Amino acid sequence: MKPQVEIYDTTLRDGSQGEGVNFSVADKLRIAEKLDAFGVQYIEGGWPGSNPKDIEFFAQTKRKKFKNARLAAFGSTRKKGVPVERDDQVRLLVQAGTPVVTIYGKTSMLHVKQVLRCAPEENLAMIGDTVRFLKHHGKFVIYDAEHCFDGYKLDAEYSIATWQAAEKAGADLVVLCDTNGGCLPNEVSAITRTAVGRLNCRIGIHTHDDIGLGVANALAALDAGAVQVQGTINGYGERTGNCNLTSVIPCIALKLNRTCVPAKSLPKLKELSQFVDEIANLRHNSRQPWVGSAAFAHKGGTHVNAVQKLAASYEHIDPALVGNTRNVLVSDLAGRSNILLKAQELGFRLTKDTPELKPILDRIKELEHAGYEFEAAEASLALLIGKTLRHRELPFRVDAYHVSMRRNGRDSICEATVKVVVGGKAAHTVADGDGPVNALDGALRLALVKFFPQLQNVTLTDYKVRILDTATGTAAKTRVLIQSADGRREWGTVGVSENIIEASLQALVDSMEFALLKK
Ligand SMILES: [Zn+2]
Image (cartoon, rainbow, N blue to C red; front, top):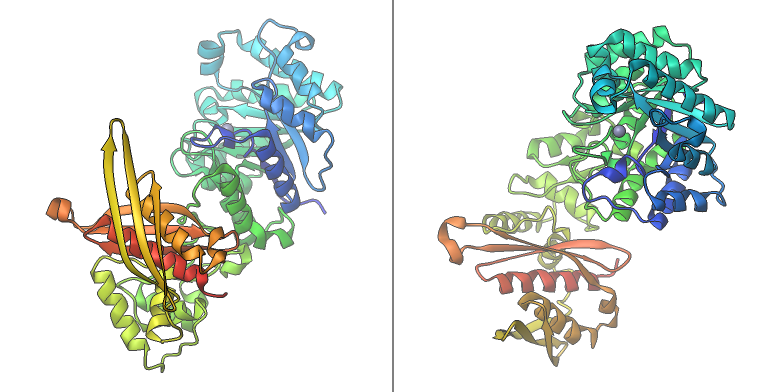
């Protein structure tokens, strides 16, 4: 069934212009497969005329079959003064072998005169010639009207003439682009309505998030009659990014109640968002609407209490609809209900009548006062609750450690020794490292894997240090947050001390202890 709103993904082209985003051909192929499985209608794979990597990508996709999505190659209208059939960039678009070709052209008189520097009529001919040529080659042609809204505000009649030039030449869709991302929803809405009135072909919307309105502007255009949204997963893109598909898709499905991606895909939205972050090697943005880990996190005691009674009281939707989960944050605002919910989430059988609940709560408040933070260190919290409930013995004990550092000419050398005791047996190990914490981590692991070979798989994925009490200078307290993973799970642990090495050791020990817990 045809969806009411089509989703056009440009993560691999516009999204890859974002700061810190760099996809290899293999990365692009994996993301394209994932997007296809998710059920977007179009995947823009790249601009063959701009780089060889994108030519390679399209060469590889020729052998691939996509189930849901149609692949699009992106490019521009022909150059001024060059016949379209002799324009290399346009030729590469045909050779990409995709069913869809998307080209952009100039809408704004300012750009025609000052950037392109050609006669307004030549620009109209460039649009018409290129669309016609691509239609001749059997392509489904999407025409992106660059600077559409800004151009319209400057010279409405000329803008309309550019859209009509594309339509007359056979464009299947005209997409209105807020290229600079500075328009307001009411402007987008009014101009889209005009386009719907003046064109017979279908209208799409392509927005950027420069003033935080990328998604709002896309929704305004849909409300005014547009039927296709272009955007990127997690809002990647130049400057502040593109319209975020991870937000606009659930808005369309759950707020506008229009069909877009298959209904069964919506609960996989968070997974898709995390997958793309993972491939891009970017840290997941916890405050991202809908799919961020904080999107349904509750911290204030009264909120938590209310959410327990009635989930809808402080949640705009059921988080499961987009594959997210309710998350109760533990903090010094924590009431009994937070701890209870968190403990249950971590797998402890705890009720409000468990006598240990109060000592656990007191201990958390005491530690948070001392500078500990458990929001990103659930593993440390789980260990704390476990210890208070006396569920188990400590698997190991660090009896002694020593860290030394010296400088030898240009190189600084760090060495650590650790003495670990496990059930009456001791292990004494030495390791060196790039820095004192790295050396300590090495020595601790070396000692522990002798007793627990499964720790071999544990890796340290992130290490963060924060100085807590800046007024006291070097004697300030240091909080260390460590993120670890073993291929199946990822967990965070925390340590606090006036000594950074000691704080790091606490977090490292917690990490290893947690890794030894069976789950
Ligand atoms: Zn763009």
